[in-house]
Each structure stands twice: as structure tokens, then as C-alpha cells.
Length: 635
Image 1 (cartoon, one colour):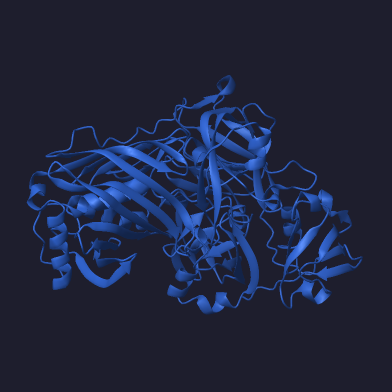
Image 2 (cartoon, rainbow, N blue to C red):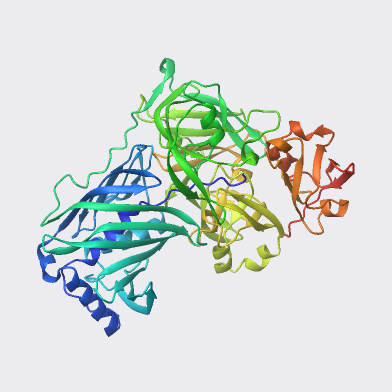
């Protein structure tokens, strides 16, 4: 539960079709650094797909049906082969989506219907490859591009030649070329923490060209967990001399699905900590207010239990990755009205996901209903007012625009859906996700830590399980020596070193992830229209407390709601020294029955305390342990 990050998955057809279109452009091969073997392969590839027939083609348009996550609907793709600009639009029974590149840059329409830019350094590098592929392709770049033949491969009795092509400043694409037909069989493309594999099949003649009428895709994390898959059946191609004038227009991005009750200019809803998790109140279709995590790294999600209680039917069947090496199944539903204070948001798609009992339970309080995310920040300027325990929403496109807020403003950028900022740790600057759904410590990603020469220190941290949507993994916890966010020095907070196979929180293109441990030192204002996060001073400074009991325990299921089962004890830590073992069952904490305590509240009580704080545990076997908590993290 610590890191319920739900990153956006890249559009499948967008990259697949773009990459294929770029391969087929009509210019002669440039003089580039490549082996004779690679050049010959690319010449054969071009001839196999129509050769000189491409000379008059300036645009490619495809229409068909896309099936993914158990949902199907029409898809329309338009690609300008001369500029590299494109627009891909799709719709299924649950939601629309679109992606594009134009003169203003890359943009993405999420499933709630609104758009935001993809403008981080990593997103720009990915767009360079997309644009280069669109403009001239791996066969025909006017500027220098590198080609590298890689070893042949054999699969299911078929033999493949392979070429890696990299435009300057972009990301490489590895092309698998069928040796029997000289046609493109697949392309493998890495971006951020995902690897996309696209397969091309059912080649047919269209306007004298050989084009694939079936394009399938599988996305996976670097650790190998499946993130998404889809299958596109193309019904019609149009190869045109020029692109129609309005074919590449992006959605206008105007908010039209928010109404404010009684003419209110802002909505205020209660916000509070449950342990270290920040919860806000919202109602679904007129229900009583329910607690939701508001997660900048997430999307609208209902737990399966909440959807069942509300009588909401679901459609589709897919998987999603997040923090951790694995994935979680998902389905979709639609909510007629989401209400937060005076704000009503209409007709929203929600994911339905089987979060475990430990995610939702809060002891004797109502369980967590789900997660809210990007769709809120795209519709409102959002203020986390920790001082007053409230969330303030100021709607966009509804009367007077939300004013700019004075404070320590940091620019926000996006690779996918999570906002990113620049920050520094131990004097090294890096790109960090801003993740209000991360209820744990600052996360540091191992690839960045190693590149910056910091691995020795953080690898010595004490071991601690953590995780989120993608499952659990063991991190290492140590103090940073210094940290700076915007213009503020944050001292030596605790940091968790993740693993390279930890999905979104093992991202090789980012430095780490900043969550509530640091964000709650401020009141925080998000304005996605201005692409800023503003840090505002708290009325009282947050205490700096680092002592831990050195254990992990949670309720296994509802039948065992009267006990925490110990899943981890830090070797040599306070709990271990007091005689606690993995598998022990805790039935009371500091005299309070466990049935009344949520797992997150217990996690907070056993971590982030003042040095020497005593924790008293009563165990199911009759033992009573007194644990003197202390800071275990190396400095």
C-alpha cells in the first residue's frame, strides 16, 4: 500500500503504426555509419514493401478495430510522413483515448478525455525517435543516423535478421526482419521503464504497397511483467500525397464535465492522514462520502468490493503494472457522478482492481474505496492544505480561472501521467516523480544511484519490504546526506533504494520518487494548466522522527481482522532483539485491540517515531514485548 503508483501505459497503436510507416519511406539510403550487411537488409526491406511506389506518398491513414483488455472499438491513425506529425484516436465502450505530435510537441489524451503534454527529457527523446521515424524512417534519414546489425535469431522455425537503428538524441529500435520474405516481423522499443514489442502480420497489397493488416502489441516492464497487450486489425489504408488539413488536430482540452453547486468557485473536501496515507472524501453516484487516496501517479480506481457494494457492473479484462516487479488484473466501469465537496464530475471511467484486504482495511473505520488521480488534476487546480485538513479544488474553464499562487514554484513535466520535477540528492541532480500516493519514504532508483556513484552508501541501508500495484520487493533504507527540492533544503530524510526490476519505481530514466514523507512538510498547490507545483509553508514545522521498531505486519484477511501477522523482522533491529519473529501474531498494540487498528496506522506507529519511543505488543501466544525504537538507517 505504500506506493500505489499507477503509471500511464503508452498507446500501443501509436508507436506500432508510426514505426512501421517510417520504415517505408521512399528516399534512397543515406550515407550513415552502418555495416554493409545492415544496409543490404534495409534495401531488401524497402523493396519488399513496395520500393519506388513510396516516392509519391506523403501521408498514411489507417482505419480499423482495436481490441485490448477485453474491450474493442474503432481506431483512426493519421501520419504525416514528411513532418513526422501524427494523431491517433481510438474509442471503446468504456473510454476514448488519443495521442499525437504536432508543432507544439507531444500530447496525450487520457481515458477521462482531457489532455496533457509529454515534455520531459525522456519524453522528448522518445518523440525524437517517433518524429524521425515519421519524417524519413530508419531507411531514409537526411541527418546522420546509426545502424547496427545485431545477431540473427531463430524462433518457431523462422529465421530473422535484426537491425538496431538510432536517430540522434532518440531511443533505439530493434527491427526483426523475416529472412524468407524480407518483411518487418516486429519492432522492439524501450522507453522509460517499459519495453514494447510489436508484431506485424497479415501483409496485403494496398495501393501497390505491402502493408500489415494485423498489428499486435505486448508491453512489459524491464523486469518482464506484462503491462498491456492489444491487437489491431486494419480495415483500410489510405496512402496520400499530402495530409488532409485537419487530420492532425488535437482535442481542445476544455473541461466540460464539471459543475459547481450553488455557483461555488471552489470545492473543499475533508483530507486526513491514515497512518502516512493521505485520504480525501468523495462520493460515487450520490453515495455517502468514502475515503479515497488522491494520487498524482494514479487514475480513478475502485476496489472490487466498493464497485460491488455500489452495484457497478464492470467490463473488460486487462493487467496493470505499478511499483513492484509484477502486475495486477483490472476491469472498467463508468461512474455517473463523482462528487467532491461542491464539485460534481460527470460520466467518468474507473478501473476496478482487486486490491487485497490489507490495502483497504482501516480497523474500525470505513475501508478505503479506491484511488483518484490524473482526472482530478486535469480539471482543477488542487491544494493539499495539511494545516487545515482539507483539499481545495478550483475548477478550470468554469468562470474566473484559478489564480497563480505565490510560493516556491517548481515546473512540472511529464513522461507519461505522473508529474516530474528536478531535485538533488547528495549534491547530484536528477528527475523525480511527485507521487502523492506514495505513503512511504523518498524512493531512489538503483540505476541513477549507481550512475551518480552513490550506490555504496545506500546499499548499506537496512532491508525493508515495500511495494504497490506490482507487488512487494525488498528495499534498502538509509539517510540521504542532503536533499534540495526547489529552493528548500530538506536535511537528511530517509530514502529507500529500490530494485531495477521494481516496475515504475525502478525506472532507469529517473532518479526517484518523492512522496508524502517530504511533501507533507509543506502545503502543496498543483496547477497543471501552468504546469507548476508550488510549495507553501506550514503553520508549524513537521517533526523529524526516524526511529523504527524494525518490523512489518498486517492483517491477512477479514477472517483474521483481530491480529497483525508479522511478515518481516529486520535482523538485529529492535523488534528482533525483543524476541519478535516472522509469523508471530499481534493482537494488541499499546493496549489497544488490533481489531480497531488499521494496518497503515500500525505501520506509522511502528515507524517514524522519536528515538527511544516504546512500543508494547501483545502476541496471540500470550507474550508481551516492549520494543525501544531507534533509527537503524546509516547516515
